[in-house]
Amino acid sequence: MIPAAVDYLRVESAEAAVAALGEHGDEAKLLAGGQSLIPLMRLRLATPTVLVDVGRATGLSGISVGGDTVSIGALTTHSSLEHSAELAAACPLLAHVASVVGDPAVRHRGTLGGSLAHADPASDLPAAVLALGGTLVVSGPGGSREIAATDFFTGFLESDLAADEVLTEVRVPVSTGGWSYQKFNRRAQDWAIVGAMVAEGGAGVALVNMASTPIRASSVEAALAGGASAADAAAGAADSTEPPTDNQADGPYRQHLARVLTRRALEAAGA
Amino acid sequence: MEVSVTVNGTVRSADVEPRTLLAHFLRDDLGLTGTNIGCDTSSCGACTVLVDGRSAKSCTLLAVQADGSDVTTIEGLAGDDGLHPMQQAFHECHALQCGYCTPGMVMAAVSLVDEYEDLDAAGVREGLEGNLCRCTGYQNIVKAVLAASE
Image (cartoon, rainbow over all chains, first blue to last red; front, side, top):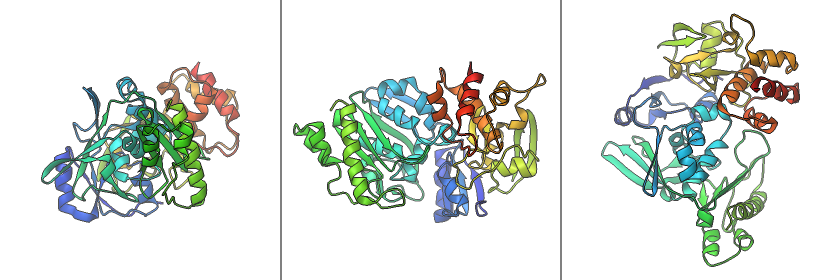
């Protein structure tokens, strides 16, 4: 389908985006790569009346490693993450996860910031940033603030971002310990039915599509920290989860997948 | 809104509604109907074109987002000396049956070969996961892409 009629504003900076969002309120939607938003607009599940296109804003893309932190501009594409030698050295989990998002055409346009702000529990990158213990930097009318990834995802397609805030940067720790992403799906280019993400040899474990947000599997992390084997720790991966049921899987099957995929991910990460 | 896009080497301008998808701009405003539209969900890849040299689904990009960009469609791929090597390989390997997915498949394959080195059959299959073909079973498409990448 064709999206509903919409006005379009192109902005050249995060500040201009904040101002435009402030002016147009709830009717406005920020557009970056558009790989999540435009499909929703085509199905008319999203019907903003104003698009604020931040896609060409300056200073919002690029990867830099300083000390023990990797800083990534929000407009950095999945493809740039996938092909960055610097990221592959400093945080191989994130580079790998970016390489399994959607398909190459999607990865050329889709952005890290867009994926996080979209806050889809079935997406790969939000769970990666969560497992890594990342921080999100956002700009708003009162300046900028930092939000821990653990506080960012608040509900299905909902985040702590206010309507007039713009995600500008994502920071993750340099992380070269054992890692793995086990993504389970049945159809090419599809979202994960369930995914299990392990960072730093099991210090960070996150699950994809097991709740209305990406979640940390804290019981697995705690079990590992207490000396449990990968298999024993993974057995608790689905504890106290209430995963969604859809046409691909029901809740109990998702819980089964979470346990199996977490075990595989822990084993692959050498936990 | 006025947009100006370099399409197959020629600057093309039009006054479009902001909601106009690049695929519709190409087909309806410019008459370049080689770019097919096969689905409503950004899944099939039939509308794949090159935007600034890299594959993009033209159904998942607004024409206004492509303003100022360099777009190549299937019509712009062949040179004065004949078919592009990828088109030639599709021809020689019989990598199509009904042909509906072919323009998008060829454009995605051109981008894939440019982006990834040392592709093998598994890499081609993975790299073309965003392009659906309901006729061939992909076997000859993979053959063609590998042939063209050599």
